[in-house]
Amino acid sequence: MNAARTAVTALAVLLAVVLQAALLPELSWRGVVPNLVLLVVVAGALTRGPNVGVILGFCAGLALDLAPPADHLAGRWALALMVVGYVAGSVRRDERPTLPVVLVTAAVASFVGSSVFALLGVVMQDPATSVGDVLAAVGVGLVSDLVVAPLVLLPLLVLLTRFEPQRRFA
Amino acid sequence: MALRTPLPPTGPDTGPGPGDRAPRPGKDDRLGRTGRPRGLARLRRLPLTVSWAPGEAQERRPPRALVAALAITGLSLMTLDHLGGDSSPVEPARTVVGEVVGPLESVAAAAVRPVAAVPAWFQTQASLRDDLAAAEAANAELESRLATEPLDRARLAEYDGLLTAAAAQQVDLVPARVVAYGAAQTFTRTVTIDAGTSSGVQPDMTVIAPAGLVGRVVGVTRTTATVLLVVDVDSTVGARVGSSNEVGFLSGGGSLDEPSRLDLDLVDTTVVPAEGDVVATWGSGNAGPYVAGVPIGTVAELFSTPRDTTKRAVIEPFVDFSRLDTVGVVVPPDTESDRALIGPDGIRR
Image (cartoon, rainbow over all chains, first blue to last red; front, side, top):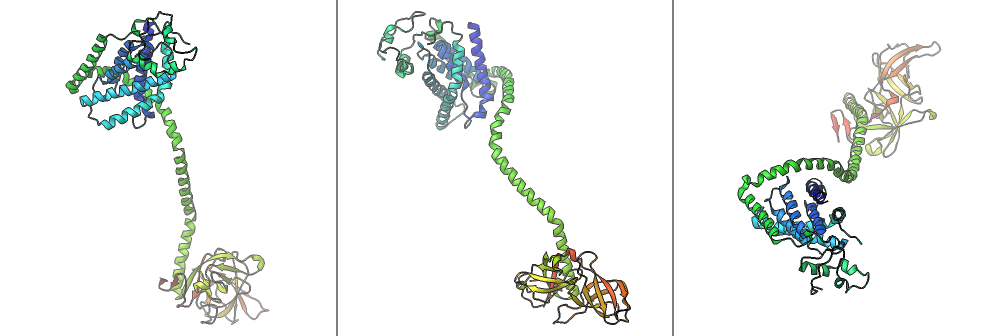
């Protein structure tokens, strides 16, 4: 069960990396695409908690850092998605998460993830971007993530909770 | 709510503690389910209790060591990548990942491309229609131009002919086009031309074509004129046979069709015109309807009847009366006209 769970999560991350690079630019607005990898991390963290969320976020972010179109400093998305995994995993999970909870989590995660990524870029001067550009990208990214969140997060949550041995749905 | 005491540890199958449920009456979970206050409150004091996937080790707050290790790893990676530049130790990893993900991206892009092209296809329908309409309009225009090109060529040739005729006859011509043929039922051979008094056309003026005599103007309006063709049975033209200068009278045969024939009655019965002689107008000076010297046709056949005192010749006209198009009306040199006149020395306004 554990191996299958890990394999499914890894597959989801890989799929997200590929789709984010190949498919979503067709649907992008001003070049900003929905961050599928971030949503996968959110889904994983929501089901498995902050501990797994942190590790999943780090690994998924690293994949995003190293996958072909990326040319930024390796580790930026890793750190950003690590924070995302921690935040998303810390949402109370004594009940099955409802759609509003999932959406709010996705929004917060998107904002935090994009901000951390951008801030790291600003700090490391990689590349030198203006604050206005950063804010615009973060805002548009937040909206686009929210748009695709119901489509991506809910199926992922259903899929991942299927591997939870003692899940209990109302 | 934020001040609520931490929940007691829950068993694998107990769900939230009773204290947790207490503030909410019965099944009214809605506030709690969507409840940001609860979520935020929980966020403030991690870790959280878990009931829907309880009892697992990773549900707890991650150990600081793990977080610190990961963070340091990430920061180190960034630093290494930053300091390393193009030869950073991350590059090999990048290459390896690229070798795996790159082909997958190619496959995904190839699979996506046809689908992604669909909206563009729909989007361009409107503009495609516009393009098609524009192309069809242009095509129609070009086709009509192509179709009328022989006509234009013919008209140009006729104008050239008119120019030549005007120079040859030393007359001024108002160019006009035949716009209507009189019906055969009326038993008159008339045509309407598109030049009238506004162009300087008056009754009894001579109408010629590049090849020769056409007829004379019998009626005129402001913009059109009616021309009696020489082939009309009522038309009589004074003519002179070229070789002998003998005069006679031409009368129409009444038929436009080939061969349209004119009958020439010579005044002097002793003269026998030769076949092939050219017959031209004899001319009435300024008073008569026909100017002098306009070629009419050639002698085709000769008849001599004992009963008659004259010889009769059949003249084949130069002009094809069934295909009249551009004609010229001979006008006095000082005519006021709304169109360009064709004179002996070219076109003048």
